[in-house]
Image (cartoon, rainbow, N blue to C red; front, side, top):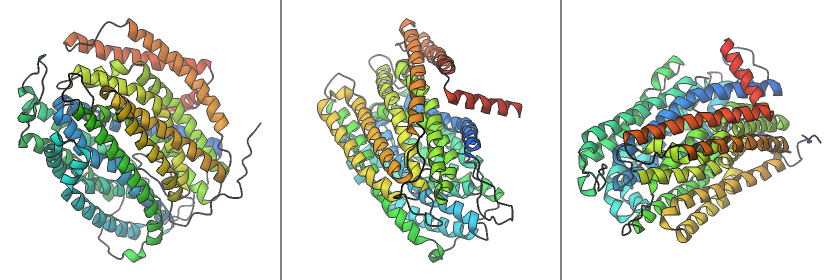
Length: 601
C-alpha cells in the first residue's frame, strides 16, 4: 500500500528567514539553484520535479564523489605515511592524541558549529540581499576571526590540562609539547570552514574540494622527511624492525611533526584566496555586528554548543580509554592497540563515509533546505529517502570489503616502516567492526541533516544527549569487561550501538514531524543490496582463505598483501554489481544513466 505523504498537524513551523542550517563543511558542489530574486537579475530557477531531482542527486553525488575521492585518498595517504614514520608506539600514540583535538574539532565541532550556522546564512544572504550578501559575509567573517583567535589562544594555553585529561602519565610531556605546536591550527580549521561557506554560497565548489589535497600533500612530505631523517636511524627492535624508543625522541622530531602538521592547515587556508578573488569577493574587516542576525545565531548556536560539548566529552573519553588500555598493558608481553590503531580504523570509516555519504548529503541538503523553507514536506522526505538509498547502495559493498578483507586491507595499507605486523593485524580486526557499524553511522548522519534543513538545532542536541551517554557507558563497559587487547574493538562496538540508537531516535522524531519517510522502500532496497553484498563478501573471503600466507615483513609478503587487497577487492566489487543486476537493484540503473551521460559529454 502506498504511504500517505500528508504532513501531520504537529509539523515544524516555517523556518525563520536567514537561518537555514547545515552541520558539516561541504567539500564539493551542491547543485544549489536560487529560488528567489538574485542580485544580477537572473530569473529564479524552478524547483526540479522529484524524478529529475533524484537523477540530479545521483549525478551530483557521483561527480562530487570522484573529486572527494582524491581528497580522501590523499588524506588517508598522509595517515599511512605518518604511521610508517612513527609507528603505533609511544610517539605514534602521543602524536595521535595531540592531533585528535584539532582534527575532531574540525570534523565534529568547527565544521559543525560554523558551517551549520554560517553556510545556510550565507546562502540566504546571497539569495536575498541586494549586494549578493557581501556585507553580511564581511561582518560574519570578522566575527568568526575574533572568536576563533580567542578560542585558539585559550585552548593552546590549556595544552598541559588537555594532555592530562587525554593521555597517560608516560605521554604527558610529549602530548603537551605537540599540542603547543598543533592546537593553534584550530583557528585555521575554522577559517577554512567559514571561507568555504562563502565560496559554496556563490556556487564555487572547486577550491573547497581540492585545497585540502594540498594540506594532505604537505603532511605527507612531513612524514616522508621524518622517515628519512629520523626513522631510518632508529634502533631496530628484537626482530629487526625499526622502532623509535622514548629516549630517542628529540625536540627536532616534535618540531617537524607538530609544526609541519599545523603548516599544512595554514597553507590550506591561504590557497582559498585565489578562488575568493575569482568569485569577486574581497574581504574587508567590518565590526558592525549588530547588523548580523545575532538572535538566530545565538538561538542555533546555543543548542549546537550543547551538541558540541557532548561530542567532545565522548571524544576525550575514547582517547583516554584507548591510552589507558595501553598503559595498563605496559608490564605484559601482549600487544595492546591504542589510539593510533583506533584512529587509523576510524579514518577508514570516515574516508568511506566522506566519499559516499558526504557527497550525497551535499547534493540533497540544498533541496531539503528549500523544501523545508517552503513547507514542502513530501519533497523533503523524497530527497531524504532517495539520498539514503543511494548512499546505502554505495556503502554496502565497502562495508562488505571491510569485513571480508579486513586483514589484507590493513596489512597492505598500514604495514610499512615502523608500523609493525601485529599493529596492522589489530587494525584489521577493528576494521571488521567498522564494516558492521558504517551503514548505521551514515544513515543516522543523513537523517540528522533533515533536522538541519528545518533549522532545528535543538532537537539534534537533545536527542544526542542520550546517544552520547550510551556511547560513553558502552566505552566504560568495554574497558571494564574486555581483555586489554580487545578494548579498541569494544570501543568501535560501543560507537555502533550509539549510531543505531541515533538512527532510531532521529527516524522516530522525523516521522512525527514530516510524516512517513519512505523507509519501506529503503528497507526493500537494503535487503537486495545486503544480499548482493553477502554474496560478494563471501566470494572474496573464500578467495582470501585460498590466498598464500602474506603475514610476514619481506618484499614477497608485501607484494602478496598488495595483490590480495587489489585482486580480491576488485573481485568483490565486480561480484556485487553483477548480483545487484540480477536482483534488479534500482540504483544500478541510476548509476548507469549517470555514467553514460557523462561519457557522452
